[in-house]
Amino acid sequence: MTGWRAILLTLTFAAVGSTPAAADLIGDEDRGGDLFNQQCAACHRIGPNAEDRIGPRLTGIFGRRAGAITGFNYSKSMARMGSDGLTWTLETLDAYIENPKALISGTRMNYPGLKDDQSRADVLAFLRANSDKPRDIPEAEPTARKTDHDLDPAILALQGDPEYGEYLSSECTTCHQRDGSDQGIPSITQWPEEDFVVAMHAYKQKLRPHPVMQMMAGRLSNDEIAALAAYFATLD
Image 1 (tube, rainbow, N blue to C red):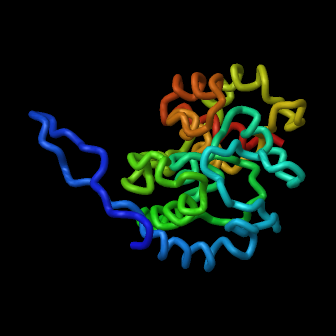
Image 2: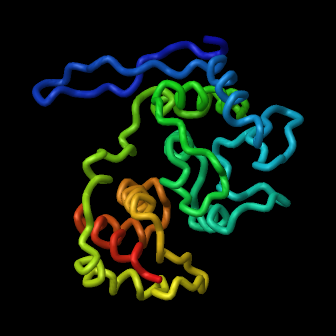
């Protein structure tokens, strides 16, 4: 493991007493570099002389606001998330690499996500090594431990009731248009149900930064989110 010492992180406490459990080790930046070259380099460049390609350059990404590179043609969704306050940290990058649509529903990045925890930890260690003052980036974040933002498959498997979703939808449609038009607020009609559910749970977990949506999603149960997803998927 080049450039990083393996360290123990994030003590977890037993229900009784305070005995620490073993934590995961930090990712391997060399393996992360190999993964980056295999899966990311076709669209992204990284390093001191990196330039934008299909995707923006990733040098110094930690601490950068989403959609912030001047002159790069970001998707509307990426620009909006940056305006809402999305900043690239170990936690938000981990969520984005695992499932890009969990954070940015309309992202143009044609990448299905990297599901393996250790592989993401390795890629993040590599990205961190190409950031400003990498040793100052907090260690007690997802390059060093498993995260809790992945959804239980049982939540994704819930079959929502569209009629109940219609009943619940009035608060949504005070801002989002039922006809799918974009009037400064993105459309949520005809979303794939899984994308809708993933996005709402990202707000519940405060990975997506919009405070109003965090509050709204936080009020909803898993069944209510599934019902809304089913309803908005049916709208023409």
